Each structure stands twice: as structure tokens, then as C-alpha cells.
Length: 100
Image 1 (cartoon, one colour):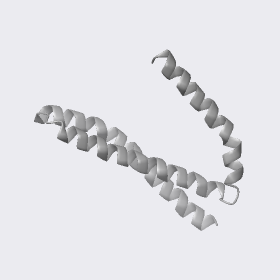
Image 2 (cartoon, helix red, strand yellow; image 1 turned 180 degrees about the vertical axis):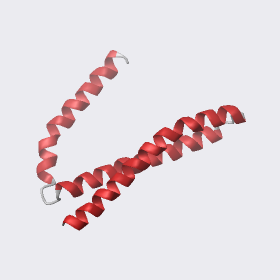
Image 3 (cartoon, rainbow, N blue to C red; image 1 turned 90 degrees about the vertical axis):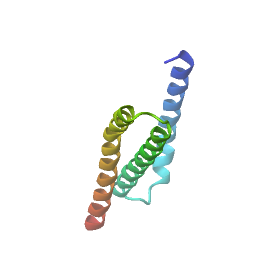
Image 4 (cartoon, rainbow, N blue to C red; image 1 turned 45 degrees about the horizontal axis):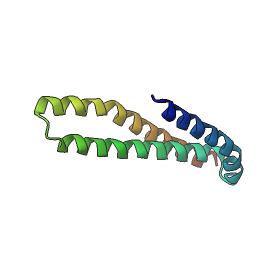
């Protein structure tokens, strides 16, 4: 990691922490459980979209069968994590419906 990239990452973290109180106040009408469910669902959806895009890029790279299989197998862990986040978000939505 270069010095500039580390500085930019630190600035982004400070910016996110400074916006936390403002964004929390803005989400006051939304119940916390539902807000968590939405965040998990969106995180899982972003992960799944990333897996699809990465898989298409690997397929279009024109690799031989063994290299293609090895690169696609690396995506399986990310794909499973994204699916887990999506399922967890959906479970929280259902739980919020039952409790609300």
C-alpha cells in the first residue's frame, strides 16, 4: 500500500465516522432491525453482482481449462459469503415482520 493510498483510506474512514451521527438521525423512522436487514441485503447483493462480473471477466480472458477452473474456484468463497449475507438480510426482514 502506498503512502497516498493509506492517507486516502484514512480520510475515508474519518469521513464515514463523522457522517455516522448525521445518517443515524436521518434513519430515525426506520426500526434498527429493519435497517440492519437492509444493510445485509444490499451488501450481499453487491457481493453477488461483483461475483457475476468477475466470473464473466474470467470467462472472457480466454484461459485454458485448468486455469479457468482455478480462477473460478477462487470466486466460490466470495460467492458463498455474499449469499450468506443476502440470506441473513432476508432472515432479519422476516424476523422484523414477525416482531413488528
